[in-house]
Length: 319
Image 1: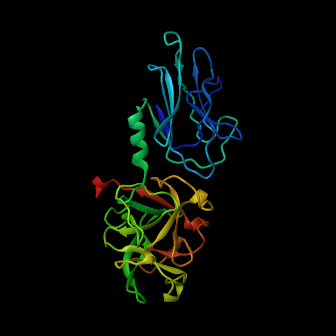
Image 2: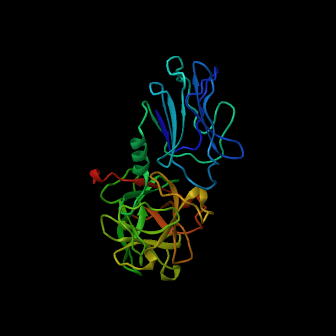
Image 3: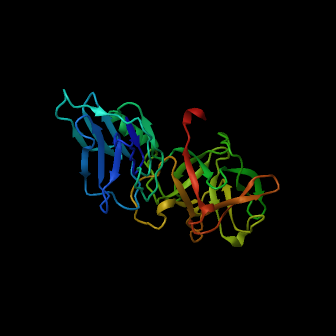
C-alpha cells in the first residue's frame, strides 16, 4: 500500500493497530513510520532524518508489505529509509480494519496543510513511487486549468474586449471545466528561456498561454482602465507579449516565504501575483458581468480568500 502527498497520517482503533501510522516527531518534525505486528503493536521507524523543514511542501510515500516483510519511506520520489522484519517466518504485519485518520489520530492533531492523499491497496515499487511523484509536478509546457477556490469557477475569457486596450477580458465562467476554453499552457516568463518539460519551482516568475486564443494572461496599471463593476486592475488575455505577462506563483500556505524550495504540484492552492504593477494578485469574486460571467481582476496582496486558485493538471490525451 502507499500513501502519497501528505504530512501526517495516523490511523488507529481501540486496540491500537498502527497500520499504517506516520507521525512527525514533536518539536523536530522528523518522521516516525509505524505499524503493528503479531509480536508488537508498535514496530517500525522511530525517528527518521533530521526533520522536515517549515514552509516547504513534501511528497511522502509510505509503503508496507507483509510478503516482503518491510516498510519503506520515500520523500519527493527518493528512497529515504526502511524497516525490515527480522523473524520472517513467524512475524507478520497486522493490517488495520478501523478508520483512517488523516491529519489527526484519535487524540492528537497536526497543524499544517495536507493535499492529494492517495491510498493504494498494494505496495508500489520504487519506480512507481518515483513516477507518482513526477506525474504530480507541473512542468513548463504542462496544460493546466485554474479554478477560483471560493466560487469554484474556472478561469477563461468571454472574448469581450476592454475598449481601452482591445484586449480580451479574463473572467471565470463555469463550475465544470471546458477543455476547449479553460486550458492554459505554462510558459517561460517574458525575456527568459527555459527547457520545456523541466519542473516549475515555487516562487518562479512564469507565464500562462491561453490555449483557445493563444493569448497570454496579462495585466497592466489601473491608469489604463479598471474592471467594469469593481474598478479594480484589469486582468486580460492578450495576444501580444511583454513584461506585463509575467506572474509569480506562490503556494498559498507559504506566501510569506520567499525562499521556499520545492515545485509546483497538481492540486496546489496558489496565489498568482502580477510582477510589473507592484505585485497585486489575481482576484475574483461572485460579481457577475452582463453576460453572466464572473469578474476577474488583480487586487489584494495574495492573502485574501478571493486570491486563492487551485491549479489542475490536464491530461493531454483529453484535449
